[in-house]
Length: 388
Image (cartoon, rainbow, N blue to C red; front, side):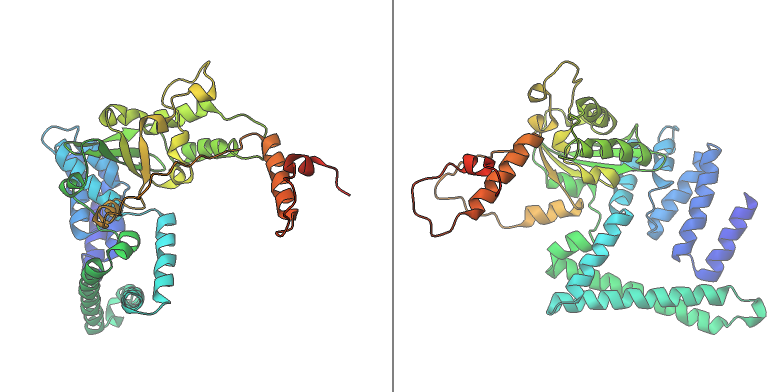
């Protein structure tokens, strides 16, 4: 423990207290305290991280969840507030890569948004170069270090942070849609609740390598719980579910597995969303690759697929790219109502045989000349006729 503390002190002195690498040392110290069940020591470190803007989910969520079980350390409301902020500020690697590509596309264009996006990227690139230079300079032997140069780099990094903060405010004011996708700001619980109606709930999931959690915010309440799954388990289960939805397998849809995934995700929060009819869901990892409507909310033994308790029967589900995007959606100008009502019907094809038959009919239709005006043809017979 003394070695960890000394390493942290040396790094803070050399790099500055808000350098990103300091987060790693704080995490290591918090993990060590957590392993010893010393939550009274681990919690201050985690809250110090959040205050400095270090928003890693692990071990932050584990420490916050564990600390609320110890009397006098932190209550559930405070624990929720801290975890909810970290949840929104620590995107997954896949989301971060998607955001990076989004910013690149905007920066390649023209106009005010493109100019601001390019400036933001330039500042980020400069900060990265200075950061690497500062680490290299601080790693030299004491008699080789240039303290003045190091101080100049620290000052410039502080200036860049200030410039990026002002730029972020401008983007949020003028291009809220872009910010909702590229740089969403954490909403407080109160701000989220103000966006909801009585029949709505925001549900968020964080699937981790060791521990996973779910958050629920309604108009009048908020809470978070640990859920019984992890990245590896859920990856394997959802991969099997996705395979059963394709025409590449003759295996029927695995209703039992669908119910299992429901029990691991929505099951622990079922009582918190009971009575709601609309869910806005924010998720990460494998949960982003399936439609939640295919989950089954009760034991499927002995039931036909049409009689299953599909989650979609109970809730209208909206997928959120970020919780902040809910604010952007609600800020949109309401669209005008249609002058006349319209009813649309779909004709889905589920079996492999029906799928092949439908493909044949589509080819037959495309084969007809656009100028044909004769009597109506039997498209199905034409599709089934042998090729010549």
